[in-house]
Image (cartoon, rainbow, N blue to C red; front, side, top):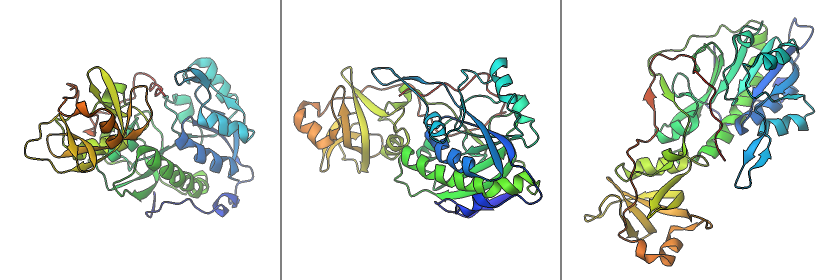
Length: 361
């Protein structure tokens, strides 16, 4: 297994241009991906001399936004710019979809941020299926590793390149790269950073993998955690939690599902927040004035609402919102019985019974 040093940047482009020793022809390859994390990975893979990229498989266009405009995935757009054929099956396990992919005669599958279960027929290709997962596996297996790392307050994350098996992110490790977390990242910013790291890790690892020079290492079971897809209700800020955790939630849940409080039936979205000490008379769940503007009293500390967006309104500072609605002081926010979707120990990890649902816009 290759264990890369901590870095935030990709490998040099010269890594992609080296020929594969002893190999006459590039390896016929299919890429599976949909989200923004996969875009730079696709670019590096398409430019790599060791592979012949036959096609890209991505999710079909879906309605986005209030106007429900049919929108292609970021990977679909990138593939078409590169002049690569695109397949967009609704379900990868559909026999016709699988036949289309196998008809391309691939020997290797590379996957990143795709969101569907990969059939055994693709896992069993001569060079297997490689998955780039934005975490230090076995920590944060599953659908939402980047929000989970921020929410947990992790000080280190990374990218794991694994050979996929029938489990959920349980395959053996081909290569790993570590990345430090400063503690102020939002999920989109960390995703963009890890995507560049992942593209470089793949570029550096492909030749050795295809030449049979890497023996993948089984994942440890100790320390394994499992994440799940996020839902809109997860974004509700719970004042019975400490402000420090809620501040991490605000950064972790951008852009989906977002973080918000409910006031008399209206939703106030919190786009940015910070933490301040409590006053002795603070009651969790009440809005209070703070020297920095508007704050929500919590079980431990105040969550200062640095930037908010009222329902149907534009983003503004918490201070500006308070000036326009001073009667909010003393109001109590709505509460939920749900707990924050954080990190939990992994139980027996089996293949999911269905595809991961697409995240709403």
